[in-house]
Length: 220
Image (cartoon, rainbow, N blue to C red):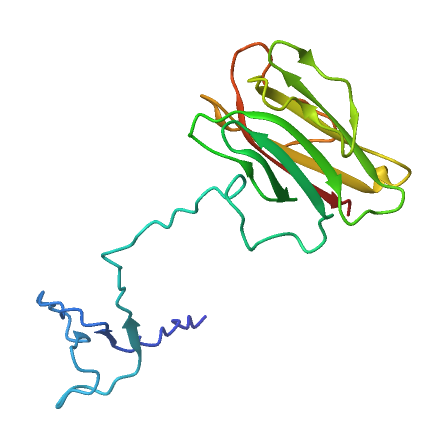
């Protein structure tokens, strides 16, 4: 029986051409069929059957980290929701008096030691079937009852601070919307966002609310 030997074709020579400005490998190689070239078309070389390109990699030496500021309780921004409900928020601030803000605006001060003494909220323009009410915890008094939109929560000129508050929606359309709110509190800073009647702030810790932010959005 004749046994046929399998013939393995010879592999083409391998030429590695560095790119991206890398220095050519200067290590001597004894195998005459393997060459490392700096120029892909050198003179007096064997025919090239295969070329493997080794790409260079550029690494930035001055990569920087971009930090985004916290805009949840910032001053007025231009990134208001296009579908938010219009609000008019009045706050009475120690040593300043009454100031009026729109929904999604921070209503008050920060780090100046001024307490919010009272506030009231209205939906403007009005939406049929949608209204709101709110309550507050006032120093030396305690929790107020739930008040209808447009009524003052707190007192003017009595040196009593608002320590916390809550807002909730009423009316037949209330289930189609959410109300969100937050506050800046003495020694605590900006609080998380609360919604739909949850209490935001403290009680009986002698910590003043310095500003609030309220907005209403339709549910998806």
